[in-house]
Image (tube, rainbow, N blue to C red):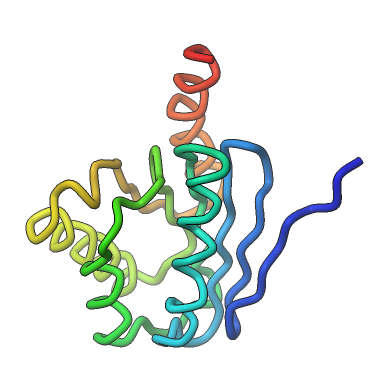
Amino acid sequence: MREREEWICGQQRVWVEAPDLVRLELHGIFALPDVDAYMPIIFELGDRLGPFTILVDMRDLKSIPAATRKRITNSERMYPYRACAVYGASFTLGVMVTMTFKAGRMLMPSTFPFPVAVFEGEGEARAWLAPHRDRQSRAV
């Protein structure tokens, strides 16, 4: 059996759960060095796996600084996400995530062609991602 692919980016953890599902677990402050380490991993996975869904756990996240949000919004490449589900975020961080992706769509629409949704729990987030994953598996 193949060993699970996993990366640590500062306090953040990224891993491949399934060929079409990548997990991101955020802790403390999602600082600029963390996102600078995370983005090449995501793009390399997209190059290798093709578009995938991403499940983001924000239960332990405290803050996303403005410089980090700006870097996420100003990506030079299209994100390889088919869909992004976020769960466990505080109300404030949930709004911040939603607004960051909306800003990205306005500034660079071709970079953010995927839907994003914020949920209270992991089960809801996984259920929302399921049809996005199923669509890909039916096409293969």
